[in-house]
Amino acid sequence: MRPRPPEPPTRTWFMRTTAYRLFMIREFTSVFLAGYLIFLLVLLARVGEGPQPFESLLVTLRSPISIILHVLVLLAALYHAVTWFNLTPRIMPVRLGEERLPDAVVAIAAGYLPWIVVSLAIGWAVLG
Image (cartoon, rainbow, N blue to C red; front, side, top):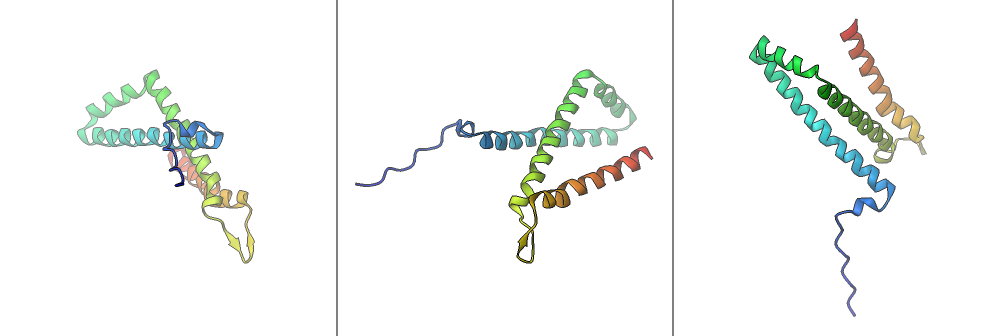
């Protein structure tokens, strides 16, 4: 008797476990980030077209819908970054000699700390 071939995955395979659902949510947040990158390209194009097109875009950005979209993209970016930083120790385990560094140390040193330093530097440059 021949073994049965495995069943093909269903369209809702990611709904089986919480870990799969969280994985798919993180992957979906990249769609928001890609959309925002396209927006930044449009913004740069408007800057290159002169002051009038850029000013019309700024007026559009003051609308409530634009503000809500920016908040949604910020939340998606934060979720994506935090989940990625938390995965870093599993992807890249760091060892000192025979000992493995704790996951929290790797996540902070490789993700959160640089993120905070760069954010503070940008904040200082923009607001200072």
